[in-house]
Length: 63
Image 1 (cartoon, rainbow, N blue to C red):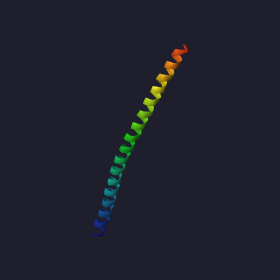
Image 2: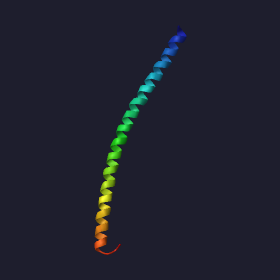
Image 3: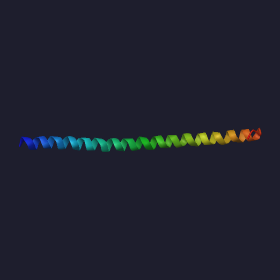
Image 4: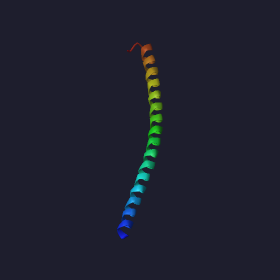
């Protein structure tokens, strides 16, 4: 009986760990999504500025 209880405790710990990892992975994917959105906005802004700067330089006949 003692042995069975020990095994049950170990199983509970594994279950808790599994749940924790599942939850943390959900949180991570959420943050990943947020970061990607922010990153893409940043890239869009950079591309926009790049385009503007190229236009300005083209007007000055630098390129």
